[in-house]
Length: 427
Image 1 (cartoon, rainbow, N blue to C red):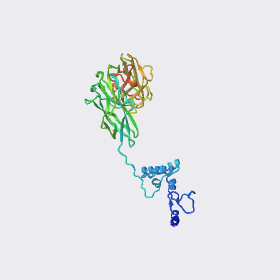
Image 2: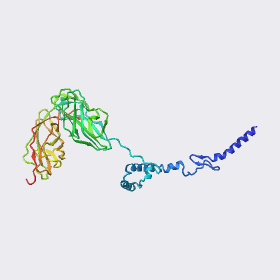
Image 3: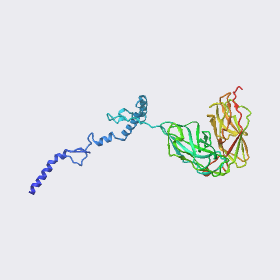
Image 4: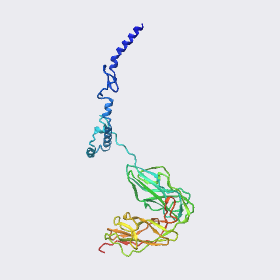
């Protein structure tokens, strides 16, 4: 009986051998009897690994990705596709076809072009915001808030005005003016706070941020000479609705600056007056035509250091491009004190003193505004400081705060200049 069972088992094994020989291995392919399983086999055509090594290679994947994006964006412009293919052939040695974009798979449709959302303007608090500090009364240029405005990559973003609010515990009359500045240049008119401690600041011209770019806008305040001591003020942008522009506004609101407290001391003062000009400027192509003359008088409180001045052709009829290469020099000795402004753009001129000009207390200094007048015969120029905050001078004692923060001294303007008529060469 035992012998019969052994014979039966052997017969079953031999009967199953043909079935095992006919099986197909998922990697090595069909196996045949008489071949050792240890000997390697050549890959049959159409196997899984052969397809991966050819169609799924790194170069093929990159080419398919490039061609897919190319046809997705420029499928409707055959001329542009041809020019791009020429550049691809010269630089990378291949061109893109419809089959390359679909990976050679028949019936595959190109992905539809991605539908972009609306343009977006994102606001963020700048990392270099001013720190909380005590500022003197009468300070004409106190940094309150720095905000970074970033435009999405879809299109340029344009803003018309921004509303800021005072979240501090002081009264609105403590701050005599609030304004916006970009790279030190004032880009809006200064405005006092309303009774609800808000103020709408409008750009002189619509402020445009290019796509995929960012711009930093600074918000400054001027402190009243009669402000309450130890009052606290903090400027902030409360909500997206406070930005008037042509894009959706996002950010972590409210965006708030540091607390600025008012001290009991008063900063030094600078008095600005206008001096007469003997000869009217001419159109002669030179760079020494005097178009403005001012006198700065420093009081006896502290020394001053002059950093920048912003002039404006207030009431003049000359146009953009008539006056080029503007700078400030001394009336005596004709030493140039500032960098050169390219032109009187939008009736404005902003110059920095390089290096800053030191002024001793009790000193009086006369300065000339010099330019090259290239055209505009018969038009007029009236170069003046539009507002007292346009002269930025730092006192030697009260003008320095924490971490190197600078506060402008109090400025007063006396009178206004006389308009100058531009003469031609024949006059």
